[in-house]
Length: 400
Image (cartoon, rainbow, N blue to C red; front, side):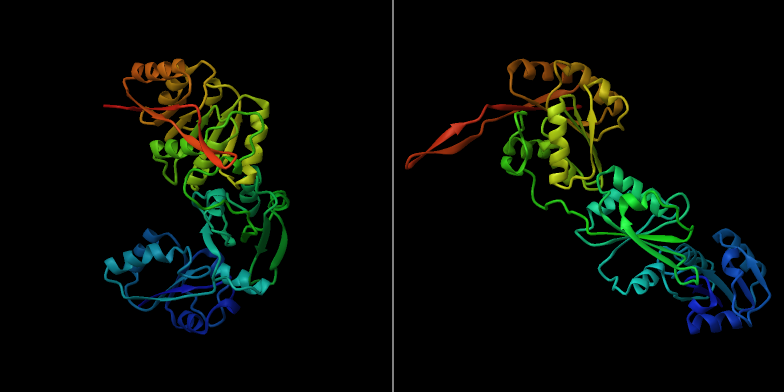
C-alpha cells in the first residue's frame, strides 16, 4: 500500500492523527529532504529524499513489498505534486490512498481569523502567473497567491504596482504553521519593496473592480476634454468586428481618449491592451480613463506609430483609430508582427478610407467596408429632433 500524506507546514505538529499513524506504520518514507528532516518520533529509518514522479516509481518497483508513505507539503489536493503522481500509480496497478493535510490557505486564514471560502485561489509556484489578470477576474473577491521559486510576494506586487494597483491591500504570511510564522500587512506598493521568506503566501484584497456590461459605454462615462473620441455605437461595432477574446493581446493605435482601449481591456480581462498615442493631452486622458474604469491590463505607449509599435508583443487584433498619415506603414507593421492579426480601421475622411483599403489590399487582404451613420435625438422646445453624427467607415481585412 502506498499512502500519499499531506504534511501541512512540514512539522510533526501539523500532521493529522491519521497521517501520523500512517507514517509510524510505514516501511519506507519518500519525500523532499525538507520534509524528511522533520519526521515525528517513531518513524522508520528507511527514508529516501525523492520527489520526482519517475524517481518515486522506480523506487517503488525496487521495493514492491511493505507500506510506503509519500510526503507532500501542505495539502495533497491544493496545487500538490500528489495530483500528478496518483494517475501514474493507478496506471501501474499500485494500491494507494490519500490523506489530506493543512494547506497554506487554511493556515493563513486561521492566522488572521477569517474564513477563506470566498477567496480566489491562484498558484504562482513554479508556473506562469499573471497577477493583474487574476485580480481583474476576481469579481471583487480577495485573491490568494501561493508563491515559490522566482515568484515571491514582492515580485507579484511589483507587477501589480506597475499596472496601477499599488494601493491594493496586501497581506503576507511567512513560514505559516511554524514557530517562525510572521504575518504583515501593507499596500501592494509597500510589499513590492520587501524581501520575504522562501515559504510565503500573498493575499490581495479591496481591489477596485471594472464595470461589468456589454460593449459600448455611454460617451459621457469617459473623460474627454478636447480630444476626439470614438462614439459609443462605433466602439460597440468595432469590438464586434475585432471578435475580441478574453486572453487576446490587443493594440489601439491612435488611442485618443482611450475609450476604445478601455472597452478592449474590459473585453479581454486575461489579455493585454496597448494604447498607442503621441498627443500629450490625449495620453493624460487615457491614464485617467484607465483608472476610472479600473482597466489595469491597459498599458499606455507614448509615441507615434509605426515606430512606437516595434517593442510591442505580437497582437491578436488591432484597432486603428488614427495613423497621422502613416496608414500603409502601420498596417505593414501590424501584419509583420502577426500576419493573421484581425484589423479594424476607423475612418471619417474619404481619403483615410481610400488609404486603408489600399494598405490592406497591398498586403493581399480583401477589404470589407461598413458605414455607420448614427443620429441622436436633441430637445428643441417641446419637440425632439434627430441630429446626425459624422458617418464613420469601419474597414476590416480578410485573407482569402
